[in-house]
Image (cartoon, rainbow, N blue to C red; front, side):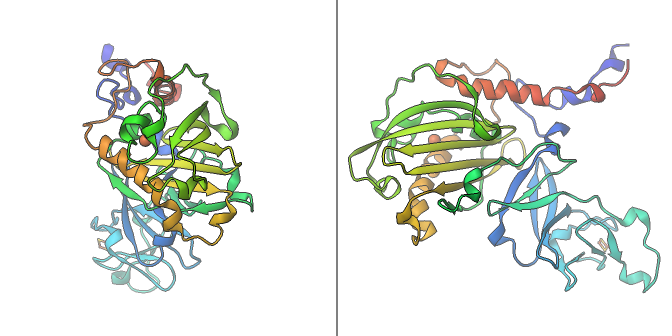
Length: 356
Ligand code: FES
Ligand SMILES: [Fe+2]
């Protein structure tokens, strides 16, 4: 019968509408959910791919995450408190959970009582990297993007807030892979001098597991741009590369003629199909930045991010992942390639296909 060969994995991605969150493959990748500096005391709720998690730090200071649903009466654990032992205490009847998801105390049962095996929760892998807390909702198979500049003492890392945008993660990556919007969306910041015509580009593997292209841009150098380029000419020349790391990370490298490098890791975490967390991390090798305040150095990049947010929040729904519903031209080649690789990632695996 036809029904016996239906494929549950395929049905969770709708190429026409672009709905992707229900695809279980995405649970196997890492997503940044908070600034490490903000995840200090107490617990908080985070939402990734439509599912809620409680996030807190254990007694050793390690970030921990669990499904935000107590096994007793389903109270949100994120509304609870953190004990002196670093466990998460449910706000309803005080059951306590450690970072591995083990229920370690049921006060109403008294000391020494047996903990029912079903009281435990599945652990959610959680790590700290690049000043961010990352979670992987399932069994990790993806890796956190590699940024070798983080180990280079000549570079300084700059953090930026984790914001929630009313934008699909797929719309974000489509935007980050594209530079034909520079002269229109970024006209106030750096795009006023950018060419509107986009030459053909060669796509291929970039260092450290990214996939994308290299290009050159003339950027306007006013409205605060001088504090980033550290040059005072009206325009500056940038050698750039932009590449994606599946599913939703993009890295852009910028090199100025002065040798100054400005490296951006742009990160989208799907809250659901149409809302996302956005943050970006920057590495720079500028001696002038050594003592500079993070907010001052990042002000210009945050302005650029606000320009993208304003544009992207005008778009509704996720990006269609097939070839229907949007028209692509040569300048969209990088995004079209990202969509092709994302579709391949989300395609059903043999072990997901039920036997007929
Ligand atoms: S609901 Fe969590 S302890 Fe009762
Ligand atoms: Fe942009």
